[in-house]
Image (cartoon, rainbow, N blue to C red; front, top):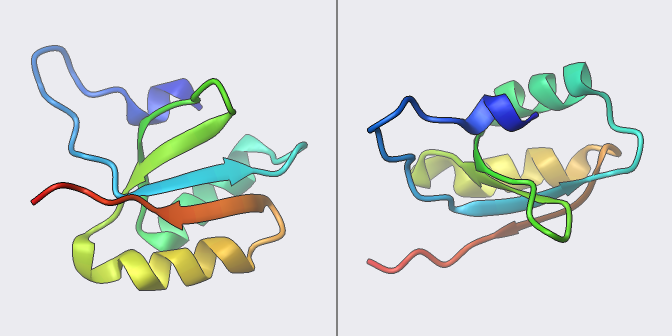
Amino acid sequence: YRLLGNAPAGVAAPAANLIVQFADGAREREVQELLRSSGARVVDGPTVTHAWLLRVEPARVDAALRTLRADPGVSMAEPLQVPQ
């Protein structure tokens, strides 16, 4: 999954506004489909706690959280506070 969030050299990745942990055994194809259907993309991760930092359009945060939380392949999905 690491390459899903890598920005090209010299290009700053957009700020993450969601954090998610995928369930043990989640398959890459399933994760990719879930990210696509929720409108999210990986901007960093995994963290030391095996979480991934995601970015969705601000207007879609609530919908993305509902989609992610409803999926059995997701063990945790929460919004991140981004300083304005």
